[in-house]
Amino acid sequence: MKYMMFVCVEESTKLTPEESQQIGPDTEAWVAEMDGRGVRLQGNQLAPVTDATTVRVRAGEVVIADGPFTEAKEQIGGFDILECADLDEAIEVASKHPVARYGMLEVRPFVD
Amino acid sequence: MTQDASDAIAEAFTEEWGRIVATLIARTGDWDLAEDCAQQAFAEAVRRWPRDGVPRQPGAWLTTVARNRAIDRLRHEQMKDQRLRAASDLMTAAQPPDDADSLLREDDQSGIVDDRLRLMFTCCHPALPLEGRVALTLRTLAGLTTAEIARAFFVPEATMAKRLVRAKRKIAHARIPYRVPPAHMLPERTGGVLAVLYLLFNEGYKASAGPDLVRTDLCREAIRLARVLSALMPDEPEAAGLLALMLFQHSRRLARVDQDGELVTLEQQDRSRWDRAEIDEAGALLERALARQSAGPYQLQAAIAACHAQSPHADATDWPRIATLYERLLQVMPHPIVALNHAIAVAMADGPDQGLVLVDELEASGELGEYHLLHATRADLLRRLGRGEQARAAYLRALELTTSDAERRFLTRRLEDSAPV
Picture 1 (tube, chains in turn blue, purple):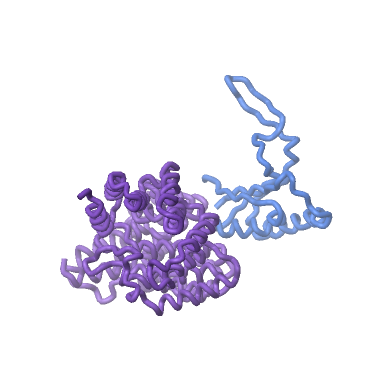
Picture 2 (cartoon, rainbow over the protein chains, first blue to last red):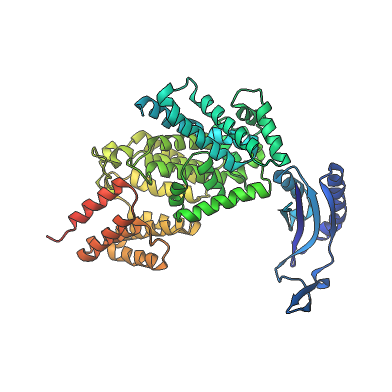
C-alpha cells in the first residue's frame, strides 16, 4: 500500500539552536532507517513557499501567480512516498520522523 | 417459532454477534462482507433452529455458516489478487471455526483479558473520527441498528448511515488494519471505548425502540465491561467516573418502571427500592476519581447522578448544585442535550419560568426541534406555569416524536391530566 507523507511545519515555528542542529542528522538517520526497511520509496525536501508558483488555466489563459495555492499557516516542507503493509505501519514510520516532534505529518493513501 | 429457538437466537445474538463479525473482519478485511455474512448466518438460524433444533454450540454453528457465506461470496465475486488471498486464507484454514478469534488472542499484547473489550479497543482506531469509530463499534460489535445509533447521537438515520459508510470507506482506502493494539497504544483509544460503553448502557437503560423500556442485558454488560476497563486503567478517572455513573443509574432500575411497565419519574420513584449497595459503590468510586482533580464529562454526570441518589426524598434534592454541575458539564461537553438538562435543573432551582427561557432559547437554536424530550420538558414547564393550552400542544408534539411505547403511554397520561375540566 502506497502512502504520500507530507512533512508539514507551521510557518511561525521557531526551533531552538539545539533542534536546528539536530534536525539534519536526525532526518538523515530516519531516511537511512526507512530506506533500509524498504518502506520509503523516495522523498525530498521542498524549497520555502516564497519560491512557489501557482499555475491555473482560466478561459484558455494561463494564469501565473507568485506563492503557494493556499494561505494556510501550515506549509508542506517536504514529502516522502511510503510503501507500508497498512496504515498502522505508515503511522509508526511517520511518528519516527524528527519533524513529528514540533510539526506534523499527513499520511494519505494513494488511490491505486 | 418455538420459544426455545427464539430465546437461543436472541441469546446468541447478544453473545456471538460481535465475535462473529470481528472474526470475519480479521480474516477478510472487508467490514461490509463481514456484517452481511453474520446477518445471513442469523437469518439461517431463524429458518433452521426451530425445525432442526438448537445446535449444541450455537456460536460455532453461526461462525461456520457465516464463514461459508463469506467464502461463497469471495469466490463468486470478480476477485482481485488480494481478495483471492483472503479467500484462500479462509478456505485453507484447517483450524476450528473460531480460528481468527484465537488468532487475535495469540497476537495479543494489549493485556486486556476480556475478549469483548479487546475487540472494542481494536475497533476504536484513532485514525477514524471519534463519532465514526464509536458508531462503527456499536454497529459491528454490539449489533445495534443504524437507527438506534442515530438516536444515540441525536442525528437523522440517513446521517448516521453516511457516517458509517464514510468510516468503512476510510478503513478500506487507507487500509486501516483490524489489529489488537499493544498496551501502550490503549490510552488514545480509551475515549472511544468509554463512549461506546456509555451509549451501550444508555441504549439498554432507555431502549430507544420497542416494547421494553429497559434492556437490562445491555446495561449489565456495559457495567461489566466498565468494571473491567476501570480495573485495567486505574489511573484513568473517567473510567471510574463512567462506572459510577452507570451504577447510579442502574440502582434506580426497579423504581423506574412500575408493575404495568409504565415509566415513573425521578420525583415519584419509591426511593426505598433503589439499590443501596450500588449507590454506595458508585459514591466511593466517584469520590476517589474526583480526588484526582481532573473531572471530565463522565465524572461530572456521575456527580449529578450522585445528587439524586444521595438525596433521601425528591424535595431534598440539591438543585442549585445540580444546576452548577450542568453548567460545568456544558463547558466540557457543549451538547444540546446537556443544555436541555441544564434548563431543567435551573427550572427546579430558580423556578419554571427561568427554565422555560432556556428551553425556548434551545428550541430557537433549532438543534433539538425533533427531540421529543425537548417538547415534553416544555410541556411540563408550561403545565407548572398554569399555561394549559400551550402545555397540551407541547405534549402532542412530544407524542408525535417519541418512538418508545412506554414513553408514549407516559406522555398520554400527562396529556390527559392536563386536559381542561
